[in-house]
Image 1 (cartoon, rainbow, N blue to C red):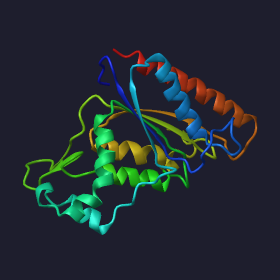
Image 2 (image 1 turned 90 degrees about the vertical axis):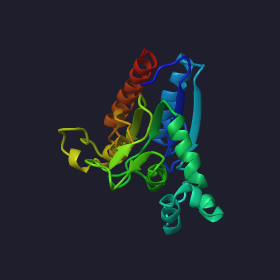
Image 3 (image 1 turned 135 degrees about the vertical axis):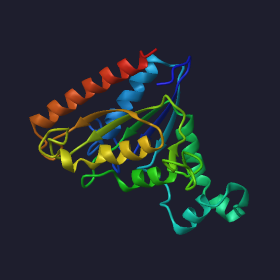
Length: 228
């Protein structure tokens, strides 16, 4: 991770649930974890700037035909209407480009990321902005354009259990792949994950998983904040 006197944090929540579990009825586990991480980080490093983006509450517009036509047009040839179509994407990519640490609360919905988070991904995967493409380039025609040194933290929750590598449902865990793959394609390769499991069981196993995840969040925040 790029380290300086001040780091820039991009905090994204994607849960459809507005509250925090443990505090609000039917509150979100991922919002609980992401809030815990960012609060702990801010206590350790109060000088750092945090940008908050709640795509669960305010979903980005999905990619459309007009969006694609605008994104693949040279910027100096875009019409005013095309610039307007890309305005939201411009804001989202600017936030990603500026951030040193990206913290994403990403619940598992039907084995993958929520639709608003997928819309965020589609808006920040931008040719000529976050990745390059040249069909005449020898070898690999695509290359990442994110500045080096960024790091990703994925804070997720799962109704079932056993989604980690080597476990019973690992092949069905499309949340981490759904974030790691496109963001690595842009140049963001370093990623950590903390997960809550057993949500649908609502028994002692869920309680233990929440406690273990919160301890994992604390360790991760402490470790990353101390990097030099």
